[in-house]
Image (tube, rainbow, N blue to C red; front, side, top):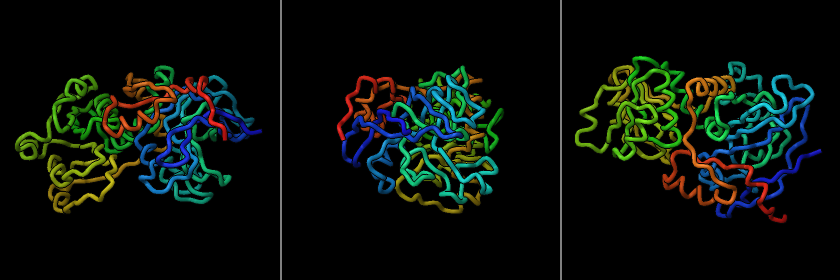
Length: 358
């Protein structure tokens, strides 16, 4: 028997969110039913539901930063029990057979059975379109459920399932740690997690921003200083200064000039996705044998590692909690940069929300 829950959906890119009755599948033998307590708002949600990354499948509920409690488990589930604190990120299934899946990199799945399945706007194994976490409950294969340690507040933990792992993965991959001189380019949802994680790894962290307006906040997050990229002779004054740059900017920037801030053999990891192609002269890489690398989210194993690391070091997303009736306004504020640093929907506010008749 399917499970009926309240959820926020849009019927088109320019329509407002509506509270609707959403049917979740029945709990299968390998499934976990999660009572959602917090759902983070990621800029990817906005890009998707506004058709900025192609035509979305409407009606659609988005949300892939999900935190809550286990309400029920399938007969074959052994790793979770009712009441456990759990989360779900950007993936709810993958083939489990390709090289990427076998090496715990499910986010790069390229195998059969429909390949990887996103938490929303993706074709599920039964042919339906996945509906995300702006809802009261969700049913997820147990292999894609994460355990949220007791030391993490659920609302602060929810954004870690996307923003946290997106920042953590390249920092871990490129060996950032004690002695590393790190620059975080941009202090938004991703950047503020990158600062915290790199600092907790023991790195000396500098925030690069257009102005010093966020200096006090950056220092509280763990940065040692903030540099204004608009200062006179900025790129000349700070040439060859950093071992690693975490580039979180989703706008046009002079990539070649920022590569000049790296020491020889330094690395720029790109996690921001500008809408336009970015020019790059190969000389900026060849001179100094530098690296520019893209980075996606992480696999399930690494996402759990990130959650455990954040709990150990007392890290969490800085959030503003909102109700289900405030999401449209929150989207506009995210686009305007008016949030510090993540909106999280308090899903308990679904209880008093009226359902729109179908």
